[in-house]
Length: 122
Image 1 (tube, rainbow, N blue to C red):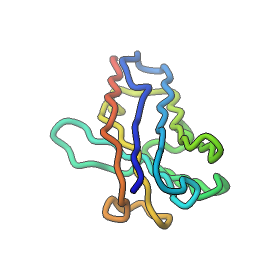
Image 2 (image 1 turned 90 degrees about the vertical axis):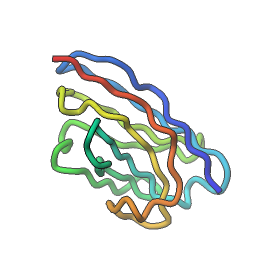
Image 3 (image 1 turned 45 degrees about the vertical axis):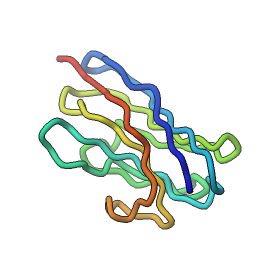
Image 4 (image 1 turned 120 degrees about the vertical axis):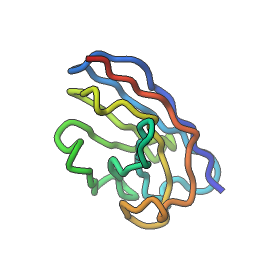
């Protein structure tokens, strides 16, 4: 089992930045690809990006590429999502998740956090 807890959400103006964190406990953190997803009101949950086991590989959705950066610290069992140049359409609940392999598919993730709200005002 892996327990995931997100933090760092909040309200920010368009063009601003936020950094989300995901703290993991339980089984070996470095064994999991860490993904970030988001879900806006009335919409399906969508992939944001993921980072590989040791942080050398990342993959992002086109909608956030160049603005968002995922990192991880295996010594501290944490993953982060740095969000820059935020837009109102980035408003959503953001979730971190853990998967046993690198994938952008929601069904590939076995463990999920409870989510943190990000609101971007125009």
